[in-house]
Image 1 (tube, rainbow, N blue to C red):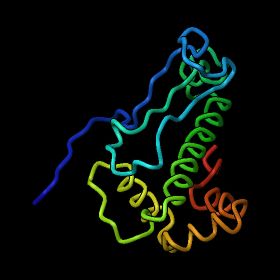
Image 2 (image 1 turned 30 degrees about the vertical axis):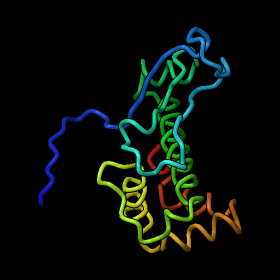
Image 3 (image 1 turned 90 degrees about the vertical axis):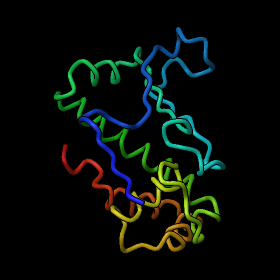
Length: 154
């Protein structure tokens, strides 16, 4: 079996941009974003199992959309990328079955997190990262900052 994906330059991460205050949703008006996903369901497809919602009324979000090349926008987007990756990895690693030998479906959240670990933290076994997360969460975040290149390109 061979899987081939052809895609353009657009993002495959599910993102929605809207005003939190005007949406009627129970999101704080002043929040910049909300990542909606359930770490209990790592088998769900990425495109249906998670969504990043950006608050269009937040000044940093509005500026990042209107002027992505501005230094402050680059900083905001770098922070956003890191926080989303941290949240997803922390959620996945909190699940014991994630660090087992389970094979996740190819388009699933679990598989995406395995690929992220394999490419960005290849020297770490998922079980060792899970132990670090449980024993020293601050060190876990520091390791992620290092391995994910937090603010290195800004």
